[in-house]
Amino acid sequence: MSEACVSDAARIRDPRQFAQSIRLQILKTAFVAGKGHLGSALSVCEILAALGLVANQFGTSEEARDRIILSKGHSSLALYCALVELGVHEPEILFEYCKDNSLLQTHPDEKLAGVEFSTGSLGQGIGYGVGVALAAKLLNRGFRTFVILSDSELNEGSTLEAAAIAGTQSLSSLVVVLDLNGQQAMGYTKDVLHVGNPSVIWSELGWETEEVAGHNVDALISALHKRRDRQRPKLVIAHTVAGKGVSFMERKIEWHYLPMTRTQYEMAVAEVSTE
Amino acid sequence: MRNQLIEALTAEAEGDQRIVLLTADLGYGVVDTFAKRHPDRFINVGVAEQAMISVATGLAKTGMIPYCYSIATFASLRALEFIRNGPVAHGLPVRIIGVGPGFDYENDGITHYAIDDLAALRSQPGLSIWAPADELDFAKEFIVAHNAPGPVYLRIPRRPVTPVPGVSCVTGGIGSRNKVLLLSFGDARIEANEVRQSMLRAGVESDYAESFWISSQSRQEIAGLMSDYDVCVTVETHYEAGGFGSWVLETAQMLTSPPRIVIHGVSSLPVGPLGSRSWLARTYMTDPATTTQRVVTITNRPS
Image (cartoon, rainbow over all chains, first blue to last red):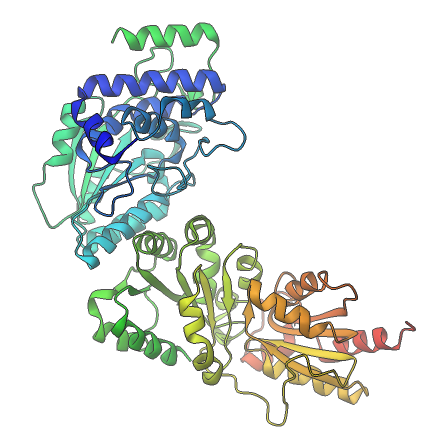
């Protein structure tokens, strides 16, 4: 697919339809593979749709492209589906998901077009984003850097290290979208570890913060565009639901791990299709 | 040594706008030359070694050459997973400066002793380790380290360890005089000389060589050098497990008639009573007499 096609594909989409298409692709791909961190993948569909529409030249290798870094690498399936919906890859590539000799695994590999960094260990992708934004500042380049962070990454000290560096260095081209779905591998975040209020903490670290409904693409797009302060990095706190769109998966810890039966798949597709 | 490194880096950065110096809040009075000359490209990230490496990964992916400065244990061990998943996995030219090999931070205790950094880092594919011992070694090869395509760990002594007077090195390809090769790594010159003296007292003469690299290229050189000998004694300021000696042992497997390898290094956990660098080496490294006895046992064995 050409660079021009990628941009066109992004422009013509209806934001909500874009997110729904990503969600349906996630379900189909996960069902065929019998794998996929479904809960967290379904949680970021609107975030990826919004970024697909806001970020310049997403998925290209253009020097001037905005960088999108999936720090929560376990949502890679959602990223692959977004890249397909954007026209970066043909839909057939999703059949390679979790197959042998495939770049499409349960965490992203930078060798796949559209993936900036290989991630998977929590609390590392945000540091990569800080470095990229710092390079943009040093090189006087105009591109922006977007990092998608999970709330479980707030457990990692390295996340706060990177956030503090970004605030201290006034990396205004950096935007972190926090996918605040309230869940992590072993339970609900409120029960696992008290990490405080990210809006308050990150403001103290030198960030502009804004809270949005994380499944409202228009609200996300607005938050990604809007800057009150052009000297500070921005944290967009997206309030989301793990497993969003599939009633029996929503807010269920086990859907971080489970594959779908055929009946569950058909029920899930029916629910998402009628949204 | 630290000052020489920063001066070289400062000079190199004049013509190379890609160079950035990050420090995890260390290098007081050392990094100033760079910081004053290139203030935009000097960043103190705070006591945050993990983020220092991930930020450096992002910088390198975007075309910069970041140098990350800290005490060797913190730069290597604290940040190990970040090094593995960042510059190593992505094949990026991040330079990790680890100051203070072995017992260099003598009175500061085990938290500051870099005696297992080689074991951790030499397992990483594509990462080169450079351990110059003095100014001459540094000047000779700084540019090699700077221009290396992948990540490099620079193991830099606080103070230079100069060659022992009267001890010259063999470089291979000249035909060996003796059956035993004594091979020192990086800053281990003093300890290597103690082993050499001990072996001499036992009537074992050895050829002497030094290595400052653990890399794919130096592996070939070491393999060629030791192929002339029956026994190769390695000396390093590192645990005997997993460091330079282990690397040499693995390298020997490339040879059809490999020499026997005897590893001399730190052999016990340095906790409890501490002291100067030389006291620590005497106390926590293998006794040179023990290493000598191993060599004698091997060389006296009928072939």
